[in-house]
Image (cartoon, rainbow, N blue to C red):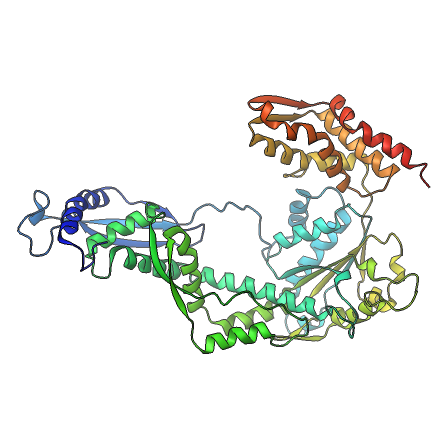
Length: 519
């Protein structure tokens, strides 16, 4: 730190040390720096002299300092490779491409994949239409029917990663009829808007990313080098900062005082008490406090503060509401659990919730703290196992609002085998990767994998059919011993054979045989 108040002895020490740092920075070629995996590029030319002497000093710090020549260092900042290769749903992504992506993670169920892909593509087709035809085209909502563990929820999870649009997955059982204590179905639209707000804010942060990083870098340099530092000193610190050599340096920064956790929402809409307190804090001025933090820790906080200063909150809210109305997707799981089959008295989470869903799916206006949201063009995807009831037990009006009905098939033994081998992050690869951390070379033979699929299918048939989730139970039973004693197999090979599989799951098969005779 070469501030104006530096001690003369410390200043002389720094003066003697700086020439080597400055010369190295001037002589080395242009360097490329990663910009936190963001898509921006900044070209900066910094003039760095070969030698530097203190103002007014009669002693030069290196030979030829009085005739120092300036060299230009071109610093280019480029994006780093994105570690997450999950594709985003672009406007020109065809249904075949969507199905191909889902095939990498989900086995079978082609009808469900096709229905989802067509529904996503139709949203793009609708945006190509002209008014008033665009407003007349309504989304074709989907009802997925199938036993548990066949991929209904996995389709929603993968769709959430794929869709570059507001996406919300909810459980139908968490809502109650209007007038009862609990969450109204309108709250799912409010939650969807919150997701859209976060997406839009992140999108706008990317647009000002270069400006944000430059401002935060200058602020950190002001703290490290001091306001009165010379250009050469500042540029040398800039190079060290970009190289990461100063990430562990502790500095003092002024950060806003944390206002504490947000108050929980009551699901009734409007401005909640927690939002009211936050608005009052903003009106009275933001309080700050000085904290000591490492450069690597304070940089993300400073970037968020700078981005919030540059982003217009009203624009974020307006664009987020429009994105929700045009591209929002709501996945309602366990919809069969709100079917009242027995009719034994009133149930706050049964038929009343179906009635409340009717105007929401058909199209209505929901009041949120950011404004009114129309649900006319929001896509609703519902799913349920329908073990204790039939899809026809739903209200007739609700069935009519879910025109596309897709039936997912139960998994066969071959399907279970494909689940263990085809997906990119299948269960076998997960277990192998986990034991690699212990330097154990775990290998599953193909006959062993087929034996695991056979055992899982047999247990599903004799006890209870829980689909692919049975594979977790069987695999954990097989891996129990080797996982517990993994340190003893370090730097060794461990092979899973069909005999080892039968040995580990024999007790499970005996229990399944006896369970058939339990009344």
